[in-house]
Length: 191
Image (cartoon, rainbow, N blue to C red; front, side):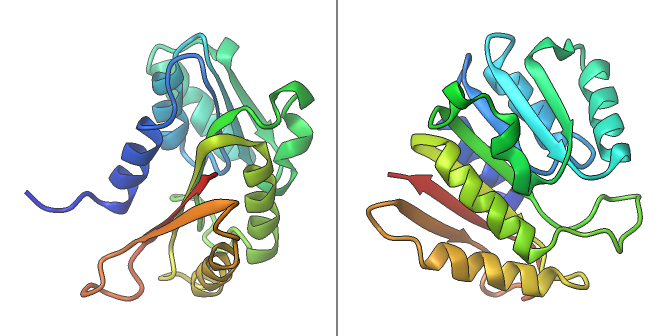
């Protein structure tokens, strides 16, 4: 038995902190894998907010959710940048979000030149931290192996590394003896 992949470990960390009835966010819906995971985790009593700037991502995610037998009443898909997530979350839910998941990079199967960018990602991470409840978690899977991904990964790591210890705990999960361009995880637990 080997170590969990970065995606599996991100799911494991979220599962430990988000439960039925919670509010959660998929900051980068892509093809809907994390959105579906979150929908199943929080159930119909919970709410999943999902963000993406590409219409295809929102449509792919909606199709995946419906194909899995979920109704859309508890899933709010938003065609907008993750940097604007706080605008779309009702004020009474600020400080009550259990988990925010980021899967950075580009939408598989779409134009690979449309990628997440460090400035909007840092803005989104700051918004996510403000939306979290105490002991809530942010997971960010970083992909340094594509054009622009290495700069974004470095910016996220630098931002997370500067968080005060009384604000958050920060974890990096990566395979040290692997390819340095392989994906890795930064997880942030709010204090």
